[in-house]
Image 1 (cartoon, rainbow, N blue to C red):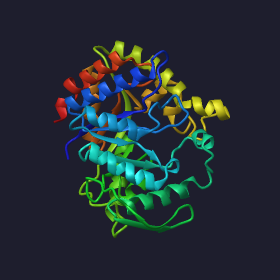
Image 2 (spheres, rainbow, N blue to C red; image 1 turned 30 degrees about the horizontal axis):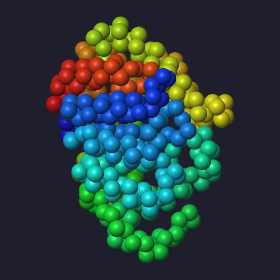
Image 3 (cartoon, rainbow, N blue to C red; image 1 turned 180 degrees about the vertical axis):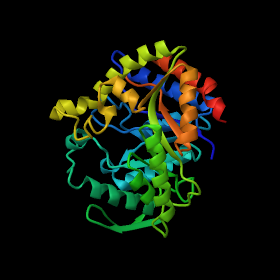
Image 4 (cartoon, rainbow, N blue to C red; image 1 turned 30 degrees about the vertical axis):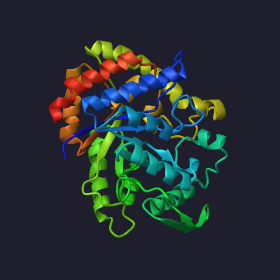
Length: 345
């Protein structure tokens, strides 16, 4: 499979930018990505957090579907403890139809303890809720009636009126933990240096290949495996460094604010020692290849190494993050699409 390119987005709040304008600009950026030939767009889910101004992913993705024609659109991820599974089944089917069968379904538990706390979730049972919700959603997609008896949900002969356009269901994705992704049979997105991604991809494929039987989320002929990184492309390395360095500080502030406000910590996420992307130290983030920036030549050289050495077939960049303006993000994506991506087609 050739290397594909995608976009990851938190839809961060930017000071002084009205919400309506924020959405209009972001939808414009997605439309630009669609025209430029990006394969997929993945939007995160956050609640009560300046990190994510699209807490209802499906509302936002429905709007994006009407602005685009080819790019696949999806969640990264639906935090399942925040959803009633019957409603999510309906909304997945609706969105798959509205998008013309372009929906990607990312699922997860949700890593931010502060957001769960605000909603009154029990951290001790969140994983149980995730697994049971996933089982219900998978059983309901494509079914005409649904019966389920579990610890957190019970449904008896519930009629299912909506069906997904993609059969048997849209492709499922998992982020962060390649072992879980492979065991569930889902496509995977992670992060880290190229060498680490090469190891992760090898381990993922071995686990994925060993999965057999009806529990596998097939059919998946060849899984997509990739990394997510914050990307900024400018005309020169110096310009890119100046903008990206400042933007990283703003991104880190947005990333940790909800946890600091509630707990005075990183809200139950991994510590900066364990995950350098949680550190406000831009040089540290750059060293672990969480931030990829520079001139088109510099970024193209990095992607060439990634394509040759990572054992992955997907690269996903966040193009508007921290305090990067709409104009800067538009130019960065334009340079990436016109001067980086063509070398890998």
